[in-house]
Amino acid sequence: MKKRIQFSLVYRDMWQASGKFQPRKDQLERIAPAIIDMGCFSRVETNGGAFEQVNLLAGENPNDAVRAFCKPFNDAGIKTHMLDRGLNALRMYPVPDDVRRLQYKVKHAQGVDITRIFCGLNDVRNIIPSIKWALEAGMTPQATLCITTSPVHTVEYYSDIADKLIAAGATEICLKDMAGIGQPAMLGKLTKAIKEKHPDIIIQYHGHSGPGLSMASILEVCNNGADVIDTAMEPLSWGKVHPDIISVQSMLKNEGFDVPEINMNAYMHARSMTQEFIDEWLGYFINPGNKHMSSLLLGCGLPGGMMGSMMADLAGIHRSINSILKSKGQPEYSTDDMLVKLFNEVEYVWPRVGYPPLVTPFSQYVKNIALLNLLTMAQGKGRFVMMDDAMWGMILGKSGTIPGTIDEELVELAKKKGYEFTDADPHTLIPDALDGFRKEMADNGWDCGQDDEELYELAMHPEQYRDYKSGIAKKRFLADLQKAKDAKLGASLSPEEIAAFKHAKADAIVAPVKGQIFFEFGGGSECVPCIEPFIGSEYKEGDTFCYIQAPWGQIMPIKACLGGKLVEIAAKQGSKVNKGDVIGYIEREHKED
Image (cartoon, rainbow, N blue to C red; front, top):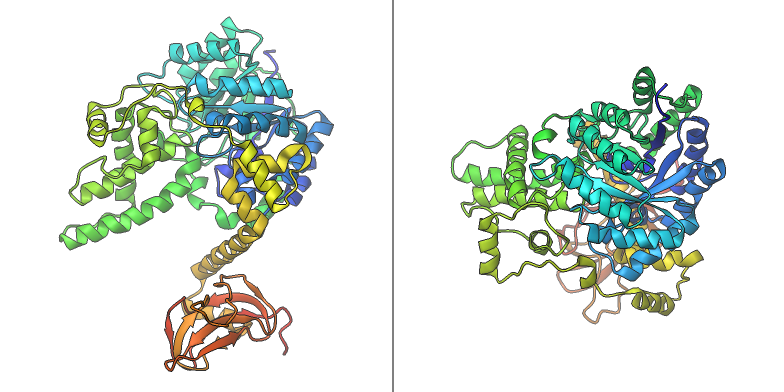
């Protein structure tokens, strides 16, 4: 029999590659025992990039969620791991050194064993400090190679990086095939090269299903010495996500590897529970297209996890371009036309910006350059004329060393704009910031939390954390959820049926006079300003919903009926209404017969 292969369930990434949000704390606590009972996982990915940010956006405390999710696995002897974006830590832009260092102290205290540290550019300067800080905190630093297929990303290129990361203290190496476009033969050779030189180093393979190469890649890396394979499970496996544990286990078992058995009763229980989470609310934020694999990803190299946001971005550009084409009397593009044009433009842009591996945030930068190029070319302005500071920062070297060569056209354009290229160590460009955030916590009367975890959260995600603390995040989330539910309802009902459905259960707020609507009113008025409403806003009987300024100047407060939850807004700030017009609908919890 061949060597023992361990499996990891990437439960965080299953959701990340499918939609916007992660399960709540109570849902994670419920699913953990079922995952443990499956008996086949030695590791589970519990948190990391995007996990905490989207928890805050949903108005939830991510520190509570991480601790609750990790504890059952800690107790069962299953190792937990997180995704760490190196210089960017858990967000999309660079993080000060003192905040990054605190991260490992916090995560170790919360029960996270392994940190998977990656840099989208594979710049070791962005990874090595995190290796040192993770070791100091007692965590296992798993240094990562972001896999892509280009003329510069060879076995020798990656092997050299692995040598430097292992010399810096990494005890594990992850092959992160984020778009699933790594060629199986190359991945097998790379695994063998690392293992022959560093036989004691654990190698973990992470490959998205996307274009369909991942199963072949898993077989190649295992036959060449890999130790741990990342897998998913239904109903979120395959598509743009990851291969299912059942298929991976069957394939490797048939190949002669020593693999753990799967408790299928537990698998079906965990599968059913995950589907329950989808049906309850998470499914409203899952793009159906992420359930499908696509060979088109091989050409552009874009990661499957960003396909949902990419399609949303594409829709806006699509409308703008079609408007331009229509004004010129030219045929408009279909959605498929636009998708092919975008993929082709990514293929054009990618080598010219130096082949950065297309992973967060560089996949977004390259995709955005390509999208804006399509728009500006339609406008007759040419390429590379609408790039923002983040896109230029990647090109200029502010995020790290680009693996390839920047096209001369972009070099000349940078000179014309007065931009300078840099080879400075990126993390030295960012001043420490914890003292300022600690003062903000004190000024607001906020507790820094167990092991400074709340301080860390503010420092890592300042905007989202402030909104979470104020309650605005939860209100926005509920409004977004209601909007998503309305959209789903709208797919099966006509607008008239939707309106009738809502209005049958709600009280109408009616304008008593003709005038102009104000949800916030100042200018010296003695009226107390109300808050501009959103779907899901809660009102008590007698609360002011809005104001109407009549043509003769009188300002009238409009009450929120008998109170309840706002289910529809029919007027905007500043809009004109006539007497008898409906301004909104409020649904009471206990509506009388």
